[in-house]
Image (cartoon, rainbow, N blue to C red):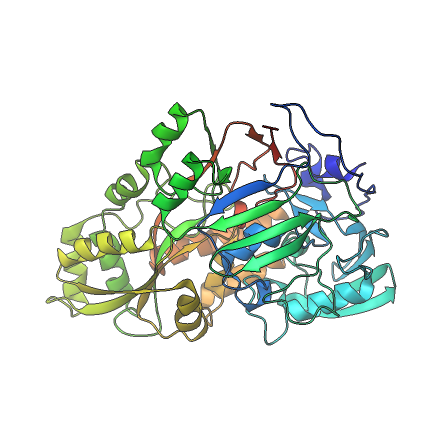
Length: 509
């Protein structure tokens, strides 16, 4: 089976490959393709991607944000497994997997032809280094807690590595799909890269762009294009203008639905898929008044989320009532669990001792639509006597102040990860939600012996965090991408910001 076949998004058998013996063979990439006639796909064409999702740095374990996933996962770096565009698990650098009867030892056989861009082999030592690095004390990677079940990693030989878990983890191979295998000799990866993917980092200009060049020595099949440049824009209007003037070929996420009619009239393709991005009003649940469930529920009921969704997304997207979107197996329809009801909000505030309201500071990044959402929230809460002071900060400042230092009262942020309800099982996560039942249910769900058992336990946690108004899930983003005429192969869905660019084709001019 070729690498291109392995990357087919709707591979029929992909869902069955998460556990057991997984076998895959790759093939070497080909040489330069002949030039193409006008209108035909040009394999040498450089694709310019417009995005507002710039990484804060280039290393996933140091808070590189969802932007680093968008650019590097599957493109520059590869994992033992790959998560497809429709959330299935496929083998990647792991060609075979054997699991012990007790579910505690996973033995992986590695792709023999894979090398890092520097020329070093992707061997068992690199896998051991990468897994230990991901769960190390210094790591702040999003899935670190889920992968903390890794007890030890043993090199059997150059192509074989055994991972022993402290307890069974039904999602282990799925979570490995997000872990990069990096070169131990690469050094600092916050501004450099050395992966095994179909592209290598060619140029990084912080605040401006990231350029990827085709890896001519890639172990799999060559990309369908001649390289990719991510061009970053802080302002959505500037991004739209860049697309309309052919400065970029596509945008990874369209944040202004009002522009869609103009793009359609001009012959652009509107690609609408499934998103896992939740817009959250998150509280620091450790501190007053947000340690009081009644206060959190009062704020929830004061915000007309349907009106907000219409204002921001022109009715696209979806109201949700917990961290779980409909694309996940443990989804519950909780959109009305904390209803919009200003009278109820005032009653809850009075019961909590805040009949005259209170004030708080809302830290929000300057990227995307967060500042616009913040103004809406401020107006809504003023109606029930709550004063909001908006503090607009950069993404870098947000990661330090809110995510790392937990030095905040409330914040707005988009959480892109799939299956990220697990964050509510970690009382040390930045929002500080601490519910022993939720922690037990989520821990037990990972040790479940069947998917059905796992699903029922996560549903219990799902209901509880909603009942507690642990955060306010304002809405689920729609996934909207726009591509210029002649551009095809753009991924449809927005699962955890994954954005595989190797199938994108651009017609010759």
